[in-house]
Length: 351
Image (cartoon, rainbow, N blue to C red):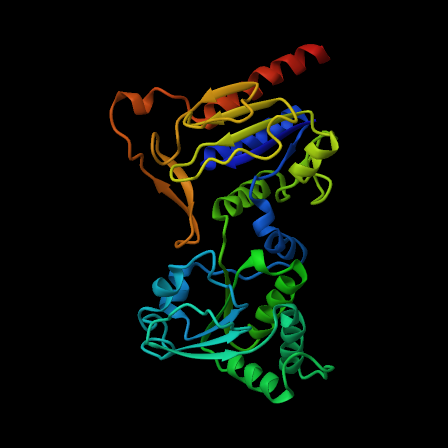
């Protein structure tokens, strides 16, 4: 049961990692998937309407921020999103941007003076109930006592419904999956009468890229396995660190090859044999069994990478120059070579 993990690589490397996990009958998980799994879970179970930051910046006239640490993982995003008034859309062009912060704490970041900010106190553990009562109010349903006064619930519901183009901003790492799912449902409900979307502030945006690449390739997000000969998704069973701690995974393929990413040796290095594909600058406390020094995507070679501000994948040119930058193989090339050789051996054994 090999585990293919790390996955800090470009789109070609991600596709090659999925192919290797498939042919090896192993499991695949990103090293940072914990930070985004509430978002993955909600998207998998109920779907979600997502926007690119660049679209929110130019269109959103009303923004609902959820949780006191919504921008903790993206401290530069408020300036990017709110520095200018909306300039697209017949109803939103030139409109004053209003922000309603649900669960605003005492340490809110400074926002541009061009926005009208209104904070609403709500404990972090009350956000789910608050969102559910707001959703019930919009649907015209009765709700029980929640963390917000009834008049506040009515105010928020009306405020959201009056948006010409609204957006809900949240940090998946600080919410549980049920709260994210409730928020997704609220956004769906609002779209019955107006335009509304959501924007997660991702601590691990490249992990989100790996989720999308895995889903495109297999039909399932991360934490999937191929031991049965086909893709099998189970978020607990195929959690990478659990597989290693339990002894179910007896080999790990660790890929760490992104420009600007801090290489961190996983805590489980030394517990199982490791095949590591890295840029070669690491100092290992537990050296891998086999180490490939590979080119770094976005530095040594061109690649397609996830861009958080664009909200999708973009081509990134190599920044390194000279002959040395082209001497190392890419992560995709090494992974594909291993998979090809493994496939030949598997075919020979079957014959």
